[in-house]
Length: 77
Image (cartoon, rainbow, N blue to C red):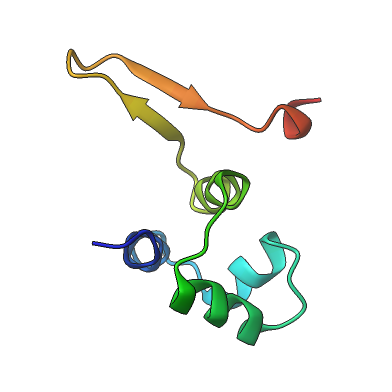
């Protein structure tokens, strides 16, 4: 499953629309987001914004279950 597929599923599960994603990512049009989805071209900063929009956290989960959460230091200031 591609990152784009996961993001589309996450948006659906959280009741968010692609237009909201366009705004959060600071893009000028839905077509720009469509291209990002089609090309599966995501930056870590994009994933952090998607997680925030959907009300969840982005993390690495270790084999023992320990979670290391990622955050955008700029947004925490």
